Length: 18
Image (cartoon, rainbow, N blue to C red; front, side):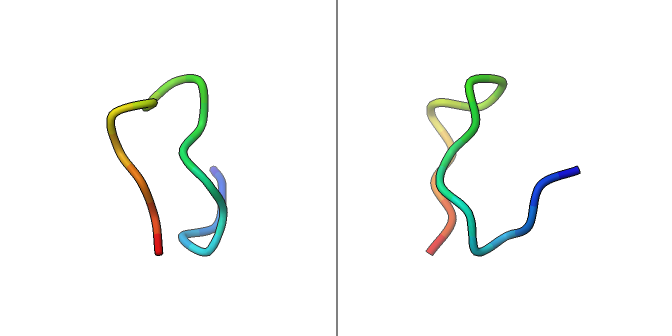
């Protein structure tokens, strides 16, 4: 749904994309 370049969504706060 969201791009991997975006920050962690509320759906996955434990997951961070760099």
